[in-house]
Length: 391
Image 1 (cartoon, one colour):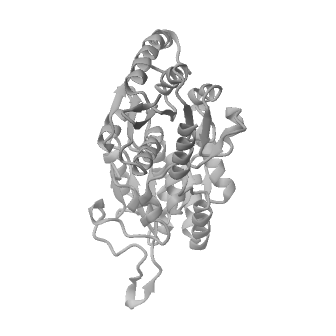
Image 2: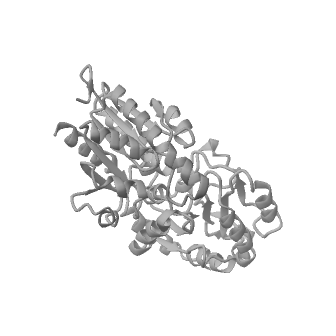
Image 3: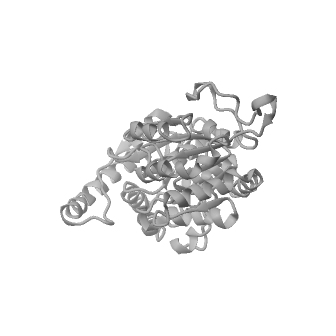
Protein backbone atom coordinates (compact mmCIF):
# COMPACT_ATOMS: atom_id res chain seq x y z
CA UNK A 1 0.00 0.00 0.00
CA UNK A 2 1.04 3.62 -0.39
CA UNK A 3 2.50 3.55 -3.88
CA UNK A 4 0.98 4.59 -7.18
CA UNK A 5 2.95 2.86 -9.92
CA UNK A 6 5.94 2.60 -7.56
CA UNK A 7 5.83 6.30 -6.61
CA UNK A 8 5.87 7.09 -2.91
CA UNK A 9 3.28 9.67 -1.89
CA UNK A 10 3.31 11.82 1.24
CA UNK A 11 -0.08 13.23 2.20
CA UNK A 12 0.02 16.27 4.49
CA UNK A 13 -3.22 17.09 6.30
CA UNK A 14 -4.01 20.29 8.16
CA UNK A 15 -3.67 24.01 7.88
CA UNK A 16 -5.80 27.02 8.63
CA UNK A 17 -2.91 29.29 9.62
CA UNK A 18 0.52 30.08 8.24
CA UNK A 19 1.99 28.53 11.38
CA UNK A 20 0.69 25.15 10.22
CA UNK A 21 1.21 25.54 6.49
CA UNK A 22 4.73 26.98 6.14
CA UNK A 23 6.44 24.18 8.11
CA UNK A 24 4.42 21.66 6.10
CA UNK A 25 5.65 23.16 2.83
CA UNK A 26 9.25 23.00 4.09
CA UNK A 27 8.74 19.31 4.88
CA UNK A 28 7.14 18.68 1.48
CA UNK A 29 10.08 20.28 -0.32
CA UNK A 30 12.60 18.32 1.75
CA UNK A 31 10.76 15.09 1.00
CA UNK A 32 10.70 15.64 -2.77
CA UNK A 33 14.30 16.93 -2.95
CA UNK A 34 15.56 13.52 -1.83
CA UNK A 35 13.78 11.80 -4.70
CA UNK A 36 12.07 13.83 -7.45
CA UNK A 37 9.87 10.86 -8.34
CA UNK A 38 8.02 11.27 -5.03
CA UNK A 39 4.64 12.99 -4.77
CA UNK A 40 3.20 15.24 -2.06
CA UNK A 41 -0.49 16.09 -1.82
CA UNK A 42 -2.02 18.44 0.74
CA UNK A 43 -5.51 18.17 2.26
CA UNK A 44 -7.12 21.23 3.84
CA UNK A 45 -10.26 23.33 3.94
CA UNK A 46 -11.41 26.08 1.59
CA UNK A 47 -11.51 28.55 4.49
CA UNK A 48 -7.87 28.12 5.51
CA UNK A 49 -4.83 30.01 4.24
CA UNK A 50 -3.69 26.80 2.55
CA UNK A 51 -6.13 27.60 -0.27
CA UNK A 52 -3.69 30.23 -1.60
CA UNK A 53 -0.34 29.30 -0.02
CA UNK A 54 -0.15 25.64 -1.07
CA UNK A 55 -0.88 26.06 -4.82
CA UNK A 56 1.55 29.01 -4.89
CA UNK A 57 4.21 26.65 -3.51
CA UNK A 58 3.51 24.25 -6.38
CA UNK A 59 1.76 21.38 -4.60
CA UNK A 60 -1.68 19.86 -5.28
CA UNK A 61 -4.37 20.54 -2.68
CA UNK A 62 -7.55 18.61 -1.92
CA UNK A 63 -10.40 20.08 0.13
CA UNK A 64 -12.63 18.52 2.74
CA UNK A 65 -15.44 20.13 4.72
CA UNK A 66 -14.74 20.31 8.44
CA UNK A 67 -14.81 22.92 11.21
CA UNK A 68 -13.49 23.33 14.74
CA UNK A 69 -15.33 22.23 17.87
CA UNK A 70 -13.34 23.78 20.72
CA UNK A 71 -14.70 27.13 21.81
CA UNK A 72 -17.76 26.79 19.59
CA UNK A 73 -21.28 27.07 20.90
CA UNK A 74 -24.87 27.07 19.74
CA UNK A 75 -25.42 26.85 15.99
CA UNK A 76 -21.70 26.88 15.16
CA UNK A 77 -21.10 23.81 17.31
CA UNK A 78 -24.12 21.98 15.88
CA UNK A 79 -23.13 22.89 12.32
CA UNK A 80 -19.56 21.66 12.76
CA UNK A 81 -20.67 18.45 14.49
CA UNK A 82 -23.03 17.76 11.58
CA UNK A 83 -20.15 18.24 9.14
CA UNK A 84 -17.92 15.63 10.80
CA UNK A 85 -19.39 12.59 8.98
CA UNK A 86 -19.23 14.47 5.67
CA UNK A 87 -15.62 15.47 6.32
CA UNK A 88 -14.67 11.92 7.23
CA UNK A 89 -16.34 10.52 4.11
CA UNK A 90 -14.50 13.06 1.95
CA UNK A 91 -11.21 12.23 3.72
CA UNK A 92 -11.80 8.50 3.19
CA UNK A 93 -12.24 9.06 -0.55
CA UNK A 94 -9.21 11.37 -0.84
CA UNK A 95 -6.96 8.89 0.98
CA UNK A 96 -8.29 6.03 -1.15
CA UNK A 97 -7.72 7.95 -4.37
CA UNK A 98 -4.11 9.00 -3.66
CA UNK A 99 -2.99 5.86 -1.78
CA UNK A 100 -0.30 7.66 0.26
CA UNK A 101 2.63 5.74 1.73
CA UNK A 102 2.30 7.89 4.87
CA UNK A 103 0.01 10.64 6.14
CA UNK A 104 1.42 13.53 8.17
CA UNK A 105 -0.83 15.74 10.29
CA UNK A 106 0.40 19.26 11.03
CA UNK A 107 -2.55 20.50 13.10
CA UNK A 108 -5.74 22.24 12.09
CA UNK A 109 -9.27 20.97 11.61
CA UNK A 110 -8.71 18.92 8.46
CA UNK A 111 -5.96 16.74 9.89
CA UNK A 112 -8.31 14.79 12.19
CA UNK A 113 -10.58 13.12 9.60
CA UNK A 114 -7.69 12.49 7.18
CA UNK A 115 -5.45 10.77 9.75
CA UNK A 116 -8.41 8.77 11.07
CA UNK A 117 -9.22 7.59 7.54
CA UNK A 118 -5.57 6.68 6.90
CA UNK A 119 -5.32 4.81 10.21
CA UNK A 120 -8.46 2.80 9.38
CA UNK A 121 -6.95 1.92 5.99
CA UNK A 122 -3.74 0.69 7.63
CA UNK A 123 -1.59 3.53 6.29
CA UNK A 124 1.25 4.77 8.55
CA UNK A 125 0.42 8.06 10.28
CA UNK A 126 2.38 10.69 12.17
CA UNK A 127 1.95 14.24 13.47
CA UNK A 128 4.23 17.24 13.83
CA UNK A 129 3.39 19.75 16.57
CA UNK A 130 4.81 23.25 16.11
CA UNK A 131 3.95 24.74 19.52
CA UNK A 132 5.02 24.17 23.11
CA UNK A 133 1.36 23.49 23.97
CA UNK A 134 -0.23 21.17 21.39
CA UNK A 135 -3.56 21.98 19.82
CA UNK A 136 -6.68 19.92 20.50
CA UNK A 137 -6.49 18.03 17.19
CA UNK A 138 -2.92 16.85 17.77
CA UNK A 139 -3.63 15.94 21.40
CA UNK A 140 -6.42 13.66 20.18
CA UNK A 141 -4.43 12.22 17.26
CA UNK A 142 -1.37 11.49 19.45
CA UNK A 143 -3.32 8.63 21.03
CA UNK A 144 -3.33 6.52 17.87
CA UNK A 145 -0.79 7.79 15.31
CA UNK A 146 2.31 5.67 14.78
CA UNK A 147 4.82 8.48 15.38
CA UNK A 148 5.00 11.94 16.95
CA UNK A 149 7.48 14.75 16.16
CA UNK A 150 7.51 18.03 18.10
CA UNK A 151 9.28 21.37 17.83
CA UNK A 152 9.55 21.89 21.60
CA UNK A 153 10.39 19.19 24.14
CA UNK A 154 7.71 20.67 26.44
CA UNK A 155 5.05 19.36 24.03
CA UNK A 156 5.82 15.65 24.55
CA UNK A 157 4.38 15.23 28.07
CA UNK A 158 1.35 17.23 26.97
CA UNK A 159 0.84 14.73 24.13
CA UNK A 160 1.49 11.84 26.53
CA UNK A 161 3.97 10.27 24.10
CA UNK A 162 7.32 9.32 25.65
CA UNK A 163 8.44 7.89 22.28
CA UNK A 164 8.16 11.19 20.42
CA UNK A 165 11.10 12.88 18.68
CA UNK A 166 12.11 16.53 19.20
CA UNK A 167 12.92 17.94 15.75
CA UNK A 168 12.45 21.69 16.01
CA UNK A 169 10.33 23.63 13.51
CA UNK A 170 11.15 23.50 9.79
CA UNK A 171 12.24 27.00 8.79
CA UNK A 172 13.04 28.09 5.24
CA UNK A 173 16.77 28.00 4.43
CA UNK A 174 17.01 31.69 3.65
CA UNK A 175 16.47 32.55 7.33
CA UNK A 176 19.55 30.57 8.35
CA UNK A 177 21.53 32.02 5.46
CA UNK A 178 20.61 35.55 6.63
CA UNK A 179 21.84 34.96 10.19
CA UNK A 180 24.82 36.59 11.84
CA UNK A 181 25.81 40.21 11.35
CA UNK A 182 23.13 42.75 10.63
CA UNK A 183 22.32 42.77 6.92
CA UNK A 184 21.04 45.49 4.61
CA UNK A 185 17.45 44.89 3.41
CA UNK A 186 17.14 43.85 -0.23
CA UNK A 187 16.75 46.70 -2.70
CA UNK A 188 13.13 45.76 -3.42
CA UNK A 189 12.08 45.84 0.23
CA UNK A 190 10.70 49.35 -0.03
CA UNK A 191 13.32 50.82 2.31
CA UNK A 192 13.98 54.53 1.98
CA UNK A 193 17.31 55.82 0.73
CA UNK A 194 18.97 56.12 4.14
CA UNK A 195 22.59 55.42 5.11
CA UNK A 196 23.26 51.66 5.23
CA UNK A 197 22.16 50.06 8.47
CA UNK A 198 25.08 49.68 10.82
CA UNK A 199 27.20 52.42 9.18
CA UNK A 200 28.49 55.41 11.12
CA UNK A 201 27.14 58.83 10.24
CA UNK A 202 28.77 62.22 10.68
CA UNK A 203 27.47 64.57 13.31
CA UNK A 204 28.07 68.32 13.55
CA UNK A 205 31.68 69.24 12.87
CA UNK A 206 32.39 65.91 11.21
CA UNK A 207 32.38 63.96 14.49
CA UNK A 208 31.37 60.33 13.91
CA UNK A 209 28.20 59.27 15.68
CA UNK A 210 27.48 55.74 16.81
CA UNK A 211 25.29 53.79 14.35
CA UNK A 212 21.57 53.87 14.99
CA UNK A 213 19.94 50.83 16.50
CA UNK A 214 17.21 49.46 14.25
CA UNK A 215 13.94 48.25 15.78
CA UNK A 216 11.53 46.16 13.69
CA UNK A 217 7.95 45.80 14.93
CA UNK A 218 5.50 43.49 13.18
CA UNK A 219 2.21 41.88 14.07
CA UNK A 220 1.70 39.27 11.36
CA UNK A 221 0.20 39.65 7.90
CA UNK A 222 -2.89 41.43 9.23
CA UNK A 223 -0.99 43.44 11.81
CA UNK A 224 -1.89 43.73 15.49
CA UNK A 225 -4.06 46.53 16.81
CA UNK A 226 -2.74 46.23 20.35
CA UNK A 227 0.87 46.35 19.17
CA UNK A 228 0.10 49.31 16.89
CA UNK A 229 -1.67 51.26 19.63
CA UNK A 230 0.89 50.49 22.32
CA UNK A 231 3.87 51.32 20.12
CA UNK A 232 2.43 54.64 18.96
CA UNK A 233 1.68 55.42 22.61
CA UNK A 234 5.27 54.53 23.51
CA UNK A 235 6.83 57.00 21.06
CA UNK A 236 6.61 59.90 23.51
CA UNK A 237 8.45 57.86 26.16
CA UNK A 238 11.14 57.01 23.59
CA UNK A 239 11.70 60.62 22.52
CA UNK A 240 15.20 60.83 23.99
CA UNK A 241 16.25 58.01 21.64
CA UNK A 242 15.14 59.85 18.49
CA UNK A 243 18.73 60.24 17.26
CA UNK A 244 19.73 56.70 18.24
CA UNK A 245 16.77 54.58 17.18
CA UNK A 246 15.57 53.75 13.67
CA UNK A 247 12.09 52.20 13.53
CA UNK A 248 10.46 49.96 10.92
CA UNK A 249 6.81 49.28 11.82
CA UNK A 250 4.52 46.86 9.95
CA UNK A 251 0.91 47.77 10.68
CA UNK A 252 -1.30 45.46 8.62
CA UNK A 253 -3.54 47.00 5.92
CA UNK A 254 -6.36 48.35 8.09
CA UNK A 255 -4.39 50.62 10.44
CA UNK A 256 -1.69 51.97 8.13
CA UNK A 257 -2.95 55.55 7.90
CA UNK A 258 -3.68 55.83 11.61
CA UNK A 259 -0.20 54.63 12.56
CA UNK A 260 1.51 56.77 9.92
CA UNK A 261 -0.24 59.85 11.33
CA UNK A 262 0.91 58.95 14.86
CA UNK A 263 4.53 58.79 13.69
CA UNK A 264 4.23 62.08 11.78
CA UNK A 265 3.29 63.85 15.01
CA UNK A 266 6.02 62.10 17.03
CA UNK A 267 9.80 62.59 17.35
CA UNK A 268 10.23 59.63 14.94
CA UNK A 269 9.04 61.28 11.74
CA UNK A 270 11.54 59.27 9.68
CA UNK A 271 10.17 55.88 10.79
CA UNK A 272 9.32 53.50 7.96
CA UNK A 273 5.66 52.50 8.38
CA UNK A 274 4.33 49.87 5.95
CA UNK A 275 1.30 47.57 5.71
CA UNK A 276 3.28 44.44 4.74
CA UNK A 277 6.82 43.10 4.92
CA UNK A 278 7.40 40.62 2.13
CA UNK A 279 9.88 39.05 2.12
CA UNK A 280 10.43 39.50 5.83
CA UNK A 281 13.75 37.66 6.05
CA UNK A 282 15.83 40.67 4.97
CA UNK A 283 13.93 42.95 7.34
CA UNK A 284 14.65 40.73 10.36
CA UNK A 285 18.30 40.43 9.36
CA UNK A 286 18.57 44.23 9.06
CA UNK A 287 17.19 44.81 12.56
CA UNK A 288 19.07 44.84 15.86
CA UNK A 289 16.02 43.71 17.78
CA UNK A 290 12.36 42.89 17.22
CA UNK A 291 8.95 43.49 18.80
CA UNK A 292 6.47 40.84 17.68
CA UNK A 293 3.92 38.21 18.57
CA UNK A 294 5.11 34.74 19.63
CA UNK A 295 3.78 32.29 17.06
CA UNK A 296 5.94 29.19 16.65
CA UNK A 297 7.11 30.14 13.17
CA UNK A 298 7.96 33.73 14.16
CA UNK A 299 10.07 32.42 17.02
CA UNK A 300 11.74 29.91 14.70
CA UNK A 301 12.57 32.63 12.17
CA UNK A 302 13.97 34.98 14.81
CA UNK A 303 16.10 32.16 16.21
CA UNK A 304 17.35 31.13 12.77
CA UNK A 305 18.63 34.66 12.14
CA UNK A 306 19.61 35.22 15.78
CA UNK A 307 17.84 38.37 16.91
CA UNK A 308 16.88 39.72 20.33
CA UNK A 309 13.14 40.06 20.77
CA UNK A 310 10.45 41.63 22.88
CA UNK A 311 7.62 39.12 22.55
CA UNK A 312 3.97 40.02 23.18
CA UNK A 313 2.03 36.73 23.04
CA UNK A 314 -1.43 36.81 21.49
CA UNK A 315 -3.67 36.44 24.55
CA UNK A 316 -6.49 34.72 22.65
CA UNK A 317 -4.23 31.97 21.25
CA UNK A 318 -5.63 28.52 22.00
CA UNK A 319 -4.39 27.15 25.33
CA UNK A 320 -2.24 30.27 25.65
CA UNK A 321 0.32 28.49 23.45
CA UNK A 322 2.00 31.72 22.31
CA UNK A 323 2.99 32.62 25.86
CA UNK A 324 4.36 29.12 26.41
CA UNK A 325 6.38 29.45 23.19
CA UNK A 326 7.68 32.85 24.31
CA UNK A 327 8.67 31.58 27.77
CA UNK A 328 10.94 28.99 26.16
CA UNK A 329 12.90 31.79 24.44
CA UNK A 330 12.85 33.95 27.58
CA UNK A 331 14.24 31.09 29.69
CA UNK A 332 17.08 30.71 27.19
CA UNK A 333 17.90 34.42 27.47
CA UNK A 334 16.77 35.37 23.97
CA UNK A 335 13.68 37.45 24.68
CA UNK A 336 11.79 39.74 27.03
CA UNK A 337 8.16 38.64 27.38
CA UNK A 338 5.38 41.16 28.02
CA UNK A 339 1.89 39.68 28.21
CA UNK A 340 -1.07 41.65 26.88
CA UNK A 341 -2.26 42.12 30.46
CA UNK A 342 1.08 43.72 31.38
CA UNK A 343 1.42 45.69 28.14
CA UNK A 344 1.39 49.50 28.43
CA UNK A 345 3.16 52.19 26.40
CA UNK A 346 5.46 52.85 29.37
CA UNK A 347 6.32 49.17 29.81
CA UNK A 348 7.03 48.68 26.12
CA UNK A 349 9.12 51.86 25.95
CA UNK A 350 11.15 50.73 28.97
CA UNK A 351 11.86 47.34 27.37
CA UNK A 352 12.85 48.95 24.05
CA UNK A 353 15.09 51.48 25.83
CA UNK A 354 16.87 48.80 27.85
CA UNK A 355 17.86 46.88 24.71
CA UNK A 356 18.48 49.86 22.42
CA UNK A 357 20.81 51.39 25.05
CA UNK A 358 22.85 48.22 25.45
CA UNK A 359 24.06 46.82 22.09
CA UNK A 360 26.03 44.11 23.87
CA UNK A 361 22.86 42.89 25.56
CA UNK A 362 21.08 42.78 22.19
CA UNK A 363 23.97 40.74 20.78
CA UNK A 364 23.91 38.29 23.72
CA UNK A 365 20.15 37.86 23.40
CA UNK A 366 20.50 37.20 19.68
CA UNK A 367 23.13 34.54 20.31
CA UNK A 368 20.94 32.92 22.98
CA UNK A 369 18.02 32.87 20.57
CA UNK A 370 20.17 31.34 17.81
CA UNK A 371 21.03 28.40 20.09
CA UNK A 372 17.34 27.44 19.99
CA UNK A 373 17.33 27.25 16.18
CA UNK A 374 17.00 23.89 14.46
CA UNK A 375 18.63 24.07 11.01
CA UNK A 376 18.30 20.30 10.71
CA UNK A 377 14.58 20.19 11.58
CA UNK A 378 13.35 19.47 8.05
CA UNK A 379 15.92 16.72 7.52
CA UNK A 380 15.05 15.14 10.87
CA UNK A 381 11.35 15.05 10.02
CA UNK A 382 11.98 13.64 6.53
CA UNK A 383 14.29 11.00 8.08
CA UNK A 384 11.44 10.12 10.44
CA UNK A 385 8.95 9.91 7.56
CA UNK A 386 11.27 7.62 5.58
CA UNK A 387 11.80 5.35 8.59
CA UNK A 388 8.06 4.92 9.11
CA UNK A 389 7.41 4.44 5.40
CA UNK A 390 9.89 1.57 5.29
CA UNK A 391 8.54 -0.05 8.43
